[in-house]
Image 1 (cartoon, one colour):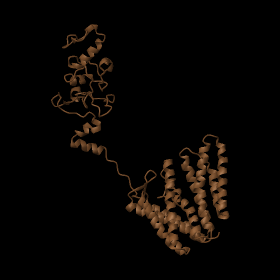
Image 2 (cartoon, one colour):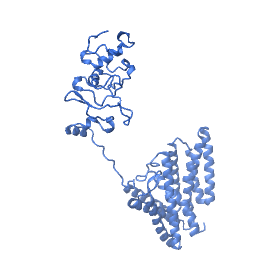
Image 3 (tube, rainbow, N blue to C red):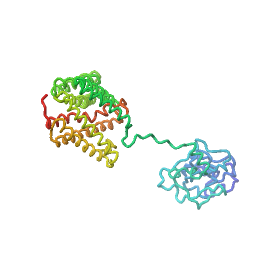
Image 4 (cartoon, rainbow, N blue to C red):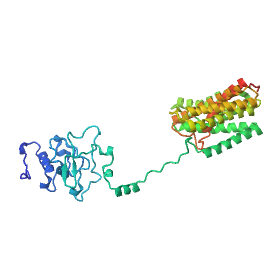
Length: 439
């Protein structure tokens, strides 16, 4: 066996040539005293000493490790090195490569080695056993960054600039100027069709139903559900016309016909996912064209223009009151898992604004007592808030922010129709009680 004349070899406790693992004895010896044998060493080979379960951390440079720990810790005890033990001064030009990766401890709470302490002093070239070193340096921060000079820190900051903050649209979470402009434009179109030529309002409702149905089907398909588009759009447009000419009974008949058409249409795509798709189709048919048909029922009655105006004004007052109260006083979330920006204070502002506005509007429009109007305003506001939350719940379940990007500052058309779709049937029911008319 080579190098038997080195100091401390052979170890008296070893059996020498009778040992079944003489190569492991030699590997231990070379790592402990590498200066006596230049160019030799185990170089971090785990197979050299399996009985001692060494984890050298680096794939190479076992000689450097032997220099730093031979005098400090016996080889008969498992060892995990302190951070940064590789000494570039002793290693010369040989620096760690991408393959030389440390083995980090599994957890910072478990001590690496019993009694392990100390630090390599690069100034004296000795191991300082009195120094303390962090068992998990990455958890406490980068060791090199912590000890870098101000110049190095400035260079690092210049090389890695801080991320720029994203532009905020305010506490309301929307582009307010764009939202106001789009809202005013839509309101002008609705009022013009309502007061200049009432049949034109039917066309506006049909367009709204078609676009809303398209957005809903498109949004649902993003989750892998495929309700049939064609029968829902055609049936939705037909339901609005049936409501205008036939009333509530015809609207219900249109819903049944649309549902049957969707069931039959979906048969062509096979049995896979059939129940899932037809249930989604039923949801879309009820949510968009059926509820939207109640706006047509409001308009077709005597003084229908005033009834539609009262319902839309109640929705606008609810939205405005909720926005103002939420921005200035909102502190307690109403439904944080569904709509984080909606607060109880905002809901109270919606109810208060709609109640005051409803009391004034209905007393002037239909000559009813003020508290009838306040009841109407509260009911419409409550329905508007619930409609907003219902659509937010659908979007949260689908994992989308807006139904589409058609309307700047609003998202999709359904993001504006959500409150109206719930408010329209509520207005029909309440006005039937407080201001009944014949159709």
